[in-house]
Length: 187
Image (cartoon, rainbow, N blue to C red; front, side):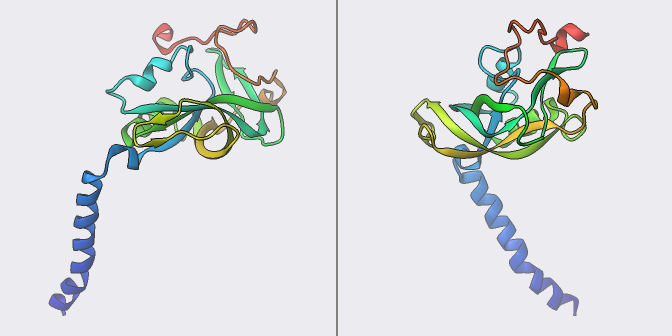
């Protein structure tokens, strides 16, 4: 009986080895995920450099984009952190950027964003705006096309956060006077 059982498992083991081997041979662009960033990870913002630190993984800018649904984007907490509250239909259409990231960068971003304690990664529909054209391993989304990507939204928040001022786009240096306090400055 045991011999028969191990024979039945053999195809699963062989398939697993073949899949693992194929994964290693696939170009990194095949294993990339789309991420929508709307806060401190955008161009010109305090954590943008993290998107291109090769020790975190690989990221490629694809396009600027806008959520197709309204969401409240607030600045809250003692460190003036931008939070997108997962309350569709409230707030504004939110401006941000779409990146294609590899598995290593996705894991880094999950850790950086405090998934699942502080943020959750959810799928959002976006309208692509300005795109870069050709990128490694493919083409960027055409302007006005609808793209799905992951975004980080707050998992839990203070009861008063939905009543805070909402923003269409985040800028740490904006005239709201709520400059983001970097992790380095907190220590």
